[in-house]
Structure formats: structure tokens, C-alpha cells
Figure 1: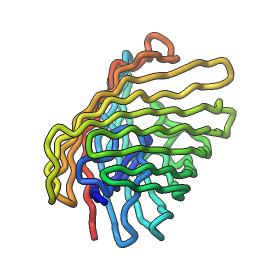
Figure 2: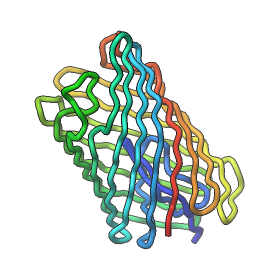
Figure 3: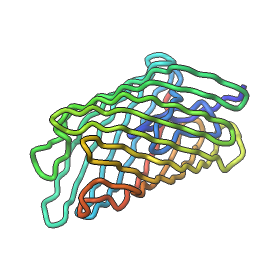
Length: 261
């Protein structure tokens, strides 16, 4: 059996270090069902440059995954956010802390391919300041239950994620859905030296008659050996429920993932 080895997402949300496949890394914005090996440790960090009609923002995200067993992983997500609205004072500081856990439901490996799925539970804590404007946090506890699936071969990878987010403090619930396709550009080799292209659709449907948010997200990723990965992608809005003067122009992500044994 061909083994693949690399570094997980992603989530996002998204989510983290992982692939056991040399040809395919994890998607940039969509989570992956392929987890770190039981002895593996990892760190992921990325910056989001967010351009809106009425503000610019930057978020630096640190993600630390840890495998308890080969099927069970826990992660912490720590964001630092800086927001600069037009005609108003800027605000910066830590945003809402997220902690999530993943458990592998199934795994079927073949020659040069693997099919996997997992369940993910995410808890968001309102640690970001939501009283000073612009707010750095939601001011609400939130719980998300998701299913993540992926079929990865030496020639391509297909990933899907669907989840339900339940929010407190009178915020609306929403349905999260992501799909990603990855394509490696270079021949397989070990240790990995691979360039991957990704095309993703990342969306969420907000209930209470608010509507749908949807992004088209192309990206590129470079795997530099067994332990290091660099990636960049841009999210372009296809649908945005925010008022016209608050809508998103784009979100640019630049990041890296490091696998530690």
C-alpha cells in the first residue's frame, strides 16, 4: 500500500495537520478526515487579511492539534485579531477561543488511495472582548457538530464537510458546508516535495431568515519534506448576507503547518 504523509487542516475553520499521503496535503479552508499519527504532534498558524467595504482586519490564528490515540484528536484554536474600521478607532486583542475534538468513524485504505470519515465537536468560548467596538468576539458560547469525509488518491483529493452550529446569546444557528478538490502538480517522491492546487467552496446558511454566505476559494500549497508545509489561498464572496456597506471584498490566507514527532 502506498503511504502518504503530510500535515493536517483545517478546518475553518477550519481544519489541521495530518495526511498520511505524500502526494496530497490537507485543504486550505476545508477540514480533512486524515489525522496525525499517534506519536505525532503539530502546530499550524496562518494569517487572514480581511477586506470589507467599511473596514480592514487581520487575524493571526494558532492551531495546536494533539492525538490521544490514532483515532482521537483534540485541538485548540487561539486567534489574535486587529480591526480597523473606516472613520473609527481600531481595536486589537485575542478573539474567541475554540477547542474541538475529532474521532475517526471509518478508514478504508487501498493501493494509492484512502477513504476516511470522522465526527468533530467544536466548542467556542466568548473570550474575545465584545463590549468595546469594534468587537473582537461574538459574546456567545457556540457548539458545532460536524461530519468530515475525504477520498484521497495519488492523483487527486476530494473533501467534504457539513456541520450544524448552535449559538447562544440570541445569535442565529447556522448550517456549515464545505467542499474541496486538490490536485498535485509534481510526481510523487519521498520525502515529499509537492506542489498542490486546491479549489474550494466554503459556505454557511444562517437561519432566522438571514440567508446564505458562500465563498469560492482557490489556493496553492507546497509540501517541503515530511514535516513542513506552506500554503496560501483567497476567498472570494459569491453570496454575502451582510448589509451592502459591511460586505466582504476578499479574505487572503497565508500560513504554514509543522509536524513534530
